[in-house]
Image (cartoon, rainbow, N blue to C red; front, side, top):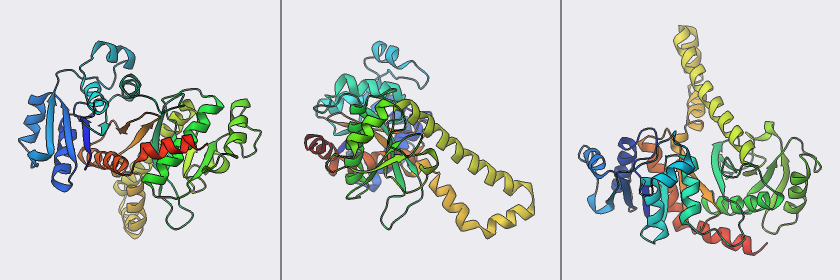
Length: 337
């Protein structure tokens, strides 16, 4: 079973929820976890929960990178930060993948500093998963969106590489033999979006192994037309934050309606199964995290607000990616273009 290095000090609820999530993994699975962070704080949490000591190691450091810190400055100033040390464990072969709920920019920089890029890859891609409708049996209810912030502006070559990497990741993780790949654009026509997107559209249509379905418009993001949606980091980050905001608003509206009057509460009870499905679809804790792609090793980035359940699921995603040979699949796809 894989060994996963976990940044115990990264995230809004670290180290409490991160350590609790790792402890749960030690009881539920055969995955080995290395918790990287302040040993005293980590042990204080472990003393309050059940766990299997043979499945958990602790690597001490007293440095951490805060969520609000400027990534470049923090990485330079804190060489022994928990995030950096977790990435280094993988680079040195002492762990197989990294999980962090911490500073996203610092996570990307840490990978760039300590991991080698895959041959031919020009830019890394930070992916994210989100719920959407499905159109056929067996289609994953989660779509993969990349990039969402690692590469702000892209050239056509980088968008094409994102498509190849995202498709390979979806094949292994979602078990979809031929994931549908779409290019997020302002229109369905091949000539929309400027020179970069026109060129990316042209090239994606002729790449073996990439099931390109054309441009995806904003209103199609929540439908099942594409399993992998490719865009520049600037646009992807805006889309991701919008989707998160919509999920939060829907949850708040349901709660407000329940508090408003007995009629609304009665209506919600009638629609209970639909409301529960809505809540489950917008519950990011069930998805764990999503990868930074383009390097010889994987880092799974969990949501900054992750609590124990989300951390546990992120560790499971990381272990599954290692077991299923995601990096090898990506490399083989890049070589076959």
